[in-house]
Amino acid sequence: MKKNKTLFRTAFLALAVLTMTGCSQKKFHIEGNITEAADSMLYLENVGVESITAIDSVKLSADGGFSFSGETDGAPDFYRLRIHDQIINISIDSTETVGVKASYPTMITKYEVSGSENCQTIKELALKQIELQQRCFDVQRAMPGMAGRDSLIRLIQAYKEDVKRNYIYRAPDKTSSYFALFQTVGGLLIFDPQTNRDDIKAFAAVATSWDLNYPEALRTQNLHNIAINGMKNDRIMQYNNQQALDVSQVQASGLIDITLTDNNGQRSRLSDLRGKVVLLDFHVFSMDESPKRILAMREIYNKFHAQGFEIYQVSFDADEHFWKQQTAALPWVCVRDPRGLGSELLSTYNVPAVPDYFLIDRNSNLVKRMVQMDDVETEIRKLL
Image 1: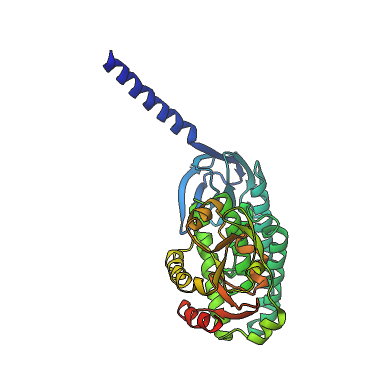
Image 2: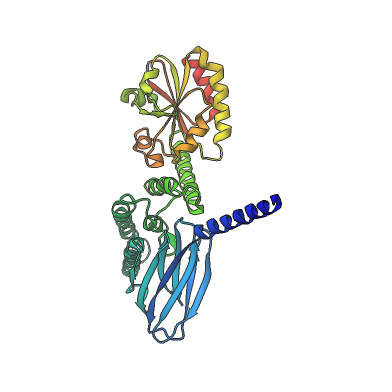
């Protein structure tokens, strides 16, 4: 009898696992008609982070009907329908059916899409990009060489401002905003995540939003890394242009106060630390170098805290739970800015990239921007 009960329990658990597995599988469908393309091969391709992979295909009949299906884990993904060099971009961010109607060979500009608001927006962006490409080509043909350079720059800048204002910053969590960041003209990215500070901010805004909504997705991690690397590059360029902070200008402007919620759920103000020497630290705990940096800060804190030294650390991590776990045992003041890397606080303090930190004297004067952790102890001793 006991053996039968054990067998029954095992079978029940196995059935439960299978049931849960079946329920967790989600499917999407892409279907429709592409006419004037009889006997042509229509490919469904996954546009991955590093490569484009064909995952299905069909030879179209006279009516051009097609239907593709696939599985999704709930995180956004990108696909494209392709006949020769004609492409229709599709985003999938839930279990849904996307309908597409078009006619070859004008499918790249004259298709209809239904069932997905994101796909509608991606179509708008794709048509804008095609128009920009044509206008750039017209300028180069009319003014070859350096003569048309300024006109091309103005065209691309106007495009970026339009897309940032009306798409990216309006809805950074949408797949269409992600799509916009990786559009190209002439084979080059329109948005530069390496050297253009304004473009890096756009990447950071989308990265922060995706961190909140899809923290485990590969695309989120890739986007986050691009934003972080861009901010690092910008910081290096700024540092090379200005080796040290102009102390007189900083003191003239005065300390800009910060009030945020700490890891104990209390509102904490930077100005409350007046009378102490303070290390104001801008940090992201999800960065690879964070553990090593926190260890170095612990040593500094332990060495100088009894003499009147304090740390006010501002985190820009998107995941609040993760931040709380990382800061639970830290002895200094840890607050979090829920706006993430898109926070105005970074521009207010002229912080192009994190990590970055400042020293504040006992009179609440911002006196030094630090770049190398090795320099901190020497500067703290001067202020103490």
